[in-house]
Image (cartoon, rainbow, N blue to C red; front, side, top):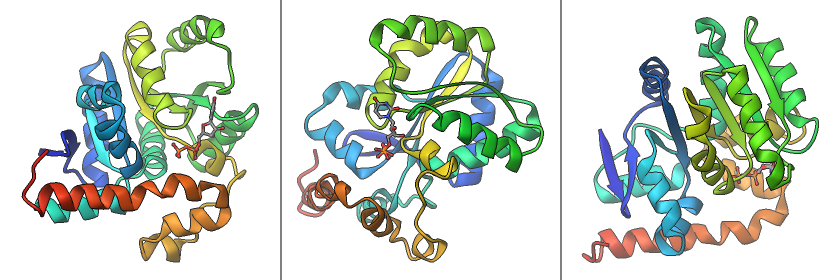
Length: 245
Ligand code: UDP
């Protein structure tokens, strides 16, 4: 089931179901977009960036990325089964890719990071085929060559780690030229998988305070996190004070 939250579609799927959905998209073929939607991006799309809202509406799969979205689902009476974050979805898809023989391409992050992430992933998931990597600090006149190279390598799964919403916009600009691929924006996931950035400990993830761990390890994010109370207020105002957007 797909619901609307603040005019954005979100799929009410568990992690297992999201992985199945991606498998179906790969079988169906064609250019396919996956967005893991967190409160920060949703707030931005609804309040200031309507092109971004259009992109979210175009996506084939939109997952509830983070406790903020799961909470909003409870407030609006359409609960999401669980959070499906970019990094968790990526790890599950890569695991499945190793079993199914899907080819994977990693685009984004600082030079060297995607290669290191690829090494870690192939070590962890034997049989995984990472057919290419490309860092995310290219010039705009290099994009055509990058897109051609991705197309020629023919991945079924393209993970794009340029940060949101740049990655969603990049995917939208180029996915039609790449052709048959499922593209997933995964933010800072390559930094974590390569070992450059530590993920919050499991106990924090279980207590659903991973955002706090992230704030502690990267204090410069505090400004970005100010959007969370604004998002919460928008949800309450829209759905609890009877003023539907
Ligand atoms: N990045 C990139 N090219 C750019 C800007 C950023 O490849 O021009 C990468 C950056 O190195 C990092 C990721 O995009 O790996 C963004 O991570 P962040 O945690 O900020 O993204 P979020 O998960 O918050 O969207």
